[in-house]
Length: 155
Ligand code: ASC
Image (cartoon, rainbow, N blue to C red; front, side, top):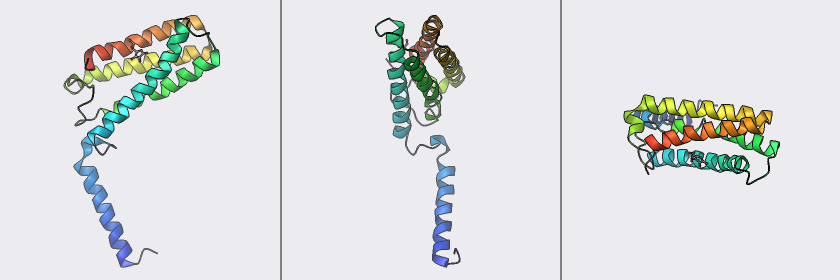
């Protein structure tokens, strides 16, 4: 099957090209361009904000509490909260990201972990279905969003 010399050399060239691409652009992880990373992280935050807002409407009493709806929204946020961080690799400056994300990387990472922990707790409260716990966890999670926005997002 692979004894055809043309196919073999094409395969080798493709393999070599992949190796060069991987070693030449470690900064971009799986993103080809900085814009792709920026679009990815903004999209993840945007969809997260939509679902967080839906729980927020319940917490504020604008929408009646429905356990399944809140549980679904919280589970989506819990998954999404793991995604944006891979899209802040070196060389992806831009968008609403402040340079401090890269110059104070440990602080940014700590903030991202705090947020994910708070979201995990919100999801646990939402799956259990206790509205008082959901309200507390929602407020705590919102504060972790805000903390990073204050320090790391352009106004
Ligand atoms: C939201 C949303 C955020 C957070 C933040 C909390 O609903 O989109 O970014 O809450 O405003 O302070």
